[in-house]
Image (tube, rainbow, N blue to C red; front, side, top):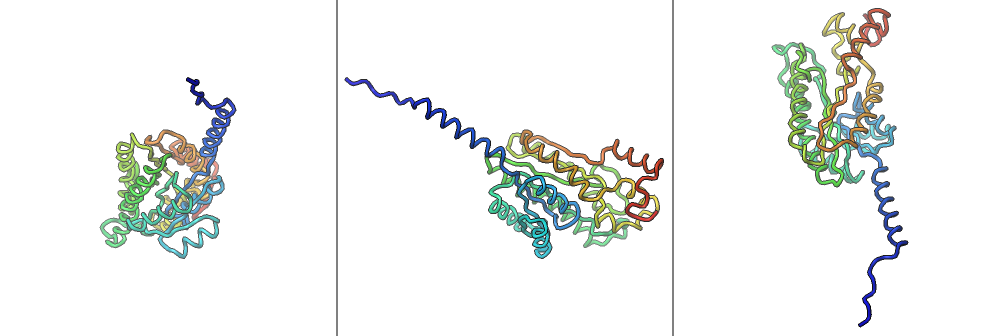
Length: 293
């Protein structure tokens, strides 16, 4: 009986296969991170989208207004899809659009938020404004986390969902903007819950504490807190582009960490805040930077 021919491939074929596999792996690792930023037609969201784009990422911007979303997408040279984060169907449509144009989503930043441009005590607050704040900041974040988490769970590489903290996240009082503070405090609890629910999955949760960012939301309160409020805003608040530049590198680094792990980025740490205040008091640094004092 004739001996059976060996089915072992030649060494050159094995080397070729290993080279192809290594090249494929390298290509995956070198692929552009794919980022979605909600509330990115202005303010911090816009600055984040620009910074991620400049870092070589594929980006989808989004806002409630279709016209402003299209304008932001043109200005930044990225993709755009309008969505009201308070509506589940529109959040789902945003994810489908992102998956279509980028092939996946590695980082979803639930940045959309508001204080309804109102600073008033709760007893005098407008009911519709309260609903807008809570729906956007809390319900919107819940819907975004759910939709993004489902989409990422279906991807081989998983992904990372980011929540934006703000005043009140640490439980401190937020006089004259109670609804905003309450909704932001809820996001820290939500991050802890998602970390528990996703700890065995390929999806992770990232909390971003941007500190005091000088946007329209902050500017609208220029007269609400008197001279002391203007002092602290001038001393501590940074322009959106400055904050975005501080957020993007650690956010991209977080993508390589273990999925399911809870991660956090804090821009205005207690030490940084103390240094800024001391420099303001001792050197007059940033006096009247944003508001006349």
